[in-house]
Image 1 (cartoon, protein in one colour):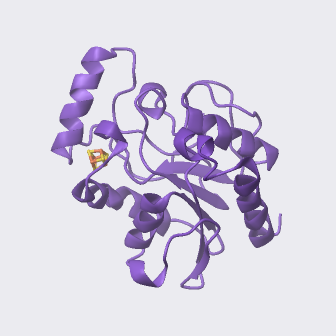
Image 2: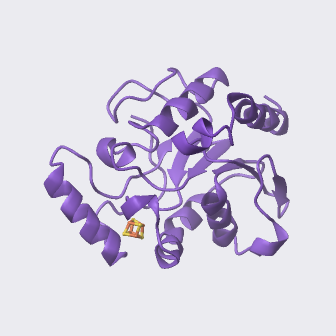
Length: 214
Ligand code: SF4
């Protein structure tokens, strides 16, 4: 299992609505992780990927970000293709998958009802993302998947949302330290509606390769 790097509380109940929802989910699905989902990946990544939140039958079930649902299939295939991992798929938190130069996290660590965290929940959980981003080395690329992840990164860095609008393929050099690249989220909805095509997603990883001189 890859190393977890930042302070993280698996028993966090700072968002009462989410904590209560997870209690109910744990009763319905006793085999599920059904707790805050920690980061997955290496200690000093060159690439930090930020998603939105665990999915009910994905990360919330397996305890690893983007594992067990449709979005994860696409993401882990792409990570393998671009040599960020030793396997093209992530099956469970105890498979042999290892990430290289990369770590994956979520803006909100607990499963939200209908995949929709409230503004307050996003704000509350931002403390974990902030800790994580503060520990990144100069030159690290942050890939935000979707608008909420994008805004959460800016919030963690105390940057104005209006100065860094979200868009697919946007690239911002932040404080001469970190580079924020954003993409439409690789969700089933976005891919089935062709809002995000495989080529579009691959081009984002090519863009990151250039930035990281890989
Ligand atoms: S979403 Fe984050 S802050 Fe809220 S309860 Fe879960 S881990 Fe804690």
